Length: 296
Image 1 (tube, rainbow, N blue to C red):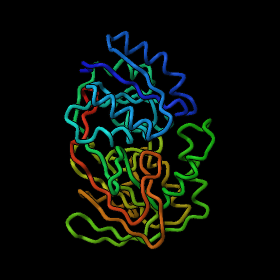
Image 2: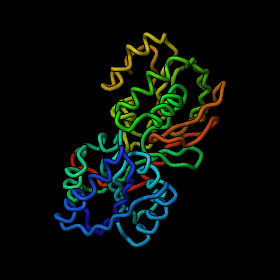
Image 3: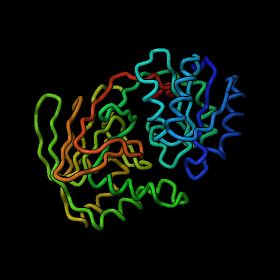
């Protein structure tokens, strides 16, 4: 249960202003449930880190009204702190963690549900010391994310589909060398490599439908080289998670993976750039207590 005061971190620009517009209703819903709330507008990710650390030091819960990028940022501050508590409300474009946890995707409805949630210790992912909560990916995803982040906010979660289709025209597969935690080395010619702590990214793309947030493992999803026509034809399957049955898609579970490629890539996680090749991506088990629906 939510039994402590809340510092509500709001990114006013998130979701094309969705978070800012939802804020009054969210505050009213939380206060109506007897929760003490103080809202703080974040000016940058560094500012959000400062606010989250101050709130945790005071014994307050930190609740984000934002997209997944701010959640990953705050999770990095709270990871490893037994006294911390994180809550998440949908205020961005993708809101994939909210989707995976089973919280309502309307921010006010999610705020009404939050006080009845229970803390659950979730894993986070780590990219050379930087924290993410969802999925770290590279290759074709690097270009698709770059385009999506520059897309008009009016597209909402469709920005990620837009990025994928725009990025496909000039993209060519790369050769990835993947060293798993047990020492096994995989060399694959692939479109994308995704190290998944969670199931979904990109506004409902279930790239790793078998991933669990508390199993101490990453689902390493390798989307192998294929024709552009076949890639476009397979894209709708990602929203159902059925693409993992395609012969070009391989899923391997590992605690960590070192990723190298035959050309340079930025690594994106939770919608933002988080590193560049070569990188090591790891699971950090039970790192952050997060308010989750009881049935989740």
